[in-house]
Image (cartoon, rainbow, N blue to C red; front, side, top):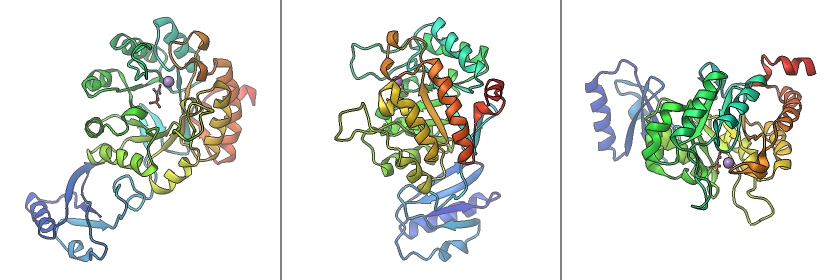
Length: 350
Ligand code: PEP
Ligand code: MN
């Protein structure tokens, strides 16, 4: 159950409501979300009569939400969650593209990429400065130097930075340079990190855990929302299945499922979802057809020399080709791509 309090509620009334919830044995959690004071109740009995609360002073509305994820659920909020990242809308009919290398490798690499993305009117550059690698012997990222390079390149070419927070101890540092904070698949159930994300006033791109059920993923989002941050983007990035033919199995079906269950924007990452360059374009198209609100794609000018995820990184020319296919497809499903809006290069092509 979700209880929405009146905007001008006095403290005495709030305390009275909390007291009543205690008396009824209802476990409650107060949240301040989008300028609204809300109380979530996680153990509402099925036969609970909400009128008991609806009549109380200071209560604006009561929503019955039976799902364990409350604030992430559509039972509570029907309309899609939208927000802007420095003027670029997310979660609207406009599909976002976040592109760039797996890792920031050098100044030259990231500036070349930023220049390319800017020339295509892409609004977000993605790249890891701290990399969560399966092997301790693999390239771990350039750390703070990488963040500085990424920020400088993004500033020069008017891009938003999407980069990963691999550990709680790095949150403050990464926040200084990022516009969107990425939580990787391995951290989807790092609950302390998620709770801190709830206190940030920046959007969080929450990847699906590679072994996570959809409900667990939505519960992870709930950690962020219940901390007071509603700017959450869910990102399907492939899960582990019995099949070992690809790196992961991109669960395209998760896109419409999550959109049915939640109001949060859902992105797709066909790069990690497939692990193979040639599969990125078809799965990008499939994701947009399935209703994705955005794509996260790894692009590299010299993928054979990439320090991480080269085999799944597409070349800039392949991104061009993909963009020209995505635009008409997006239009077919009643949407537009963010880079399409003012892109003269695409206009001359069509
Ligand atoms: C990445 O985006 O480069 C990354 C490491 O992603 P994931 O957490 O999905 O593996
Ligand atoms: Mn990667």
